[in-house]
Image (cartoon, rainbow, N blue to C red; front, side):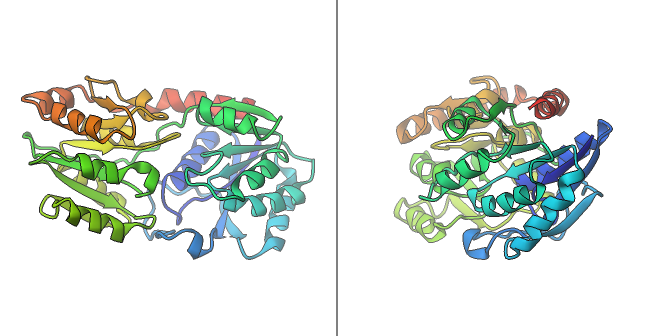
Length: 353
């Protein structure tokens, strides 16, 4: 089949771009003729406060990539759609409702000639705005089918459209390099990735037991000053290290090598790579029972699970983790994930959707 994926890829960074790129490679490996229609300019900067692009690729770039889309050029959206009329399948990678106007322009250019699927990383954002729901409803009612990454997200999609909705768990797209760990307990935890309110960093700071340090590494989606103030108010300045900003791929293994465990105190979640990223780098994961996090951690084997939004429960979990011999025991239970079965199911589900 001739398949077009519309979405971010290198030089854009992050999980969405990595997933788009890996999906293109996987579909091409199955013998399909694949092209990525990507962005020259994806979002206005005021809608995305972090660093949007990178100078070195995270993984192997996909050779069949065209980077013409621009959020400022509706004529380019329609032109892209017209180019895609010859495709057998068009996959629209949906990361945010902000993309919907461009995608509607692409769909207008395609007309009804080509099957289209909306591949939704999130059907609606964690922190929602009044326009999110009507925009997503307009998009999902215009495509032929929808693919989501969890049953909860599928139910949300079905509340917006009567189109066919399929579910396939988000498969791993992990870096090739891993942490080279040395033996010993460091009394230091890691919070890694984009810092947004739903990820619960404030809860972790309030739950941090005496004698335990924390490294926070990632871009702040606003709230850096508030976090710095909270660290000071809690008297954690000597134990909490804030490393705001994008973490380059080559720096990730070193961060995990310095930590006893990765902590994911999310208030809510859909799909996430972070549990697998922790396990790939040999560290246990302390996570809340939300979204796919709970599916990827085996409580008491390769990490610990705790109910979301409960500071006292999170503190007890961290204290339980640091009981004598527990860090070593839980680390011994950590196994790297095999991505192949996940991708086989994912590709099959996508092509059948």
